[in-house]
Length: 112
Image: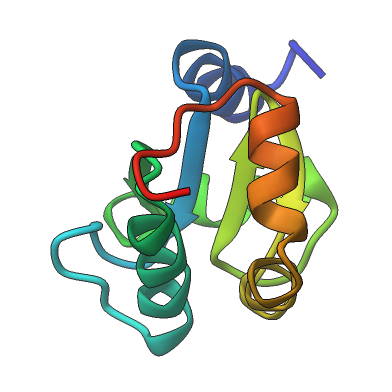
């Protein structure tokens, strides 16, 4: 996997940031409803996260799909582990599973 320069860039983001959201747009200005929904969930929990705008780089946009073997964006990663896309994140947030997973991984949440 490290032979792929795009995968190396993605892995570097995951190594440097405890919570990373590969999304369309930025956390301040999401450019699709699904990305906006995940930003809203993370914001409500008070989670500090890094947003990576896949619209700025076509290699990252396709590369993240291949990296996780997941066909859609947004994609949420916590401590380097792929968690899921919009529907999964919303379901986990509604059930309390997302907040519990973040606590289990020692991610600081200001609102939980």
